[in-house]
Length: 278
Image (cartoon, rainbow, N blue to C red; front, side):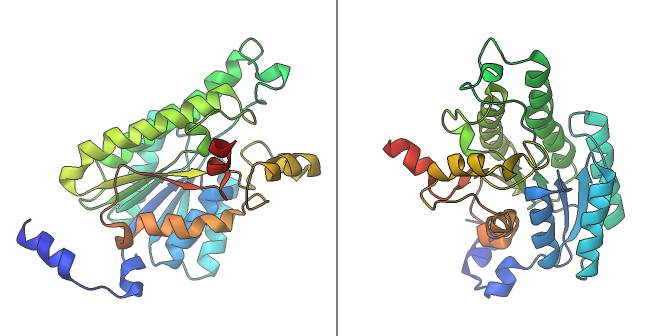
């Protein structure tokens, strides 16, 4: 262990110091709603300057206004993570605006179509366009984002990828492309952890279970019957609110997770444990 490493390990930190992001700069993709919005908000509350990226300019302007109203420093750039040049330009713009890049959340994701219990979600029934669209955002988009941030993020930086419990096991509630992409990004995170570790850059994945977001479409989760079906799969008996992602997001973005890299951290109300029990 080097002298610097020994000093770091031995230096006590207050709770505030462990989670303080003051002076650091972050980028969050898919920041216009849902988990991305919640992540951007907690990073700003912890003191970071936050760059918001989303395909929907109106949504990121709304999120930026809310963060600014609470005293946070932020701005948004419309970009498409599935287009390498688009996401690279947005990340560079954010780094140029803040003069640095310390934290990145590759959060943007979509879902298309039902699971295999419906005709439109079977192997023969899944439309090719749906498969391609999900691959473009959830897999290519994550890779494009990591490619854009890895060469720009400061040594000691933190990267977090949004995966899913659907990446750990079969999930009849979502389509083939969704489970495939979420499984794939888990291994991308492990691979990238090995590459980036010599620079002290840590990368981890969060694996949410059922959260109330717009990933399946505006208002898609407002159907009482669907909420009831999801609740049956969760030991805590309910879907999660995006606000409940904030604690884990801040942990992985902060000094509090200084010895965590290459991991995947489940936040699902016990759903994954239940699936194994049954």
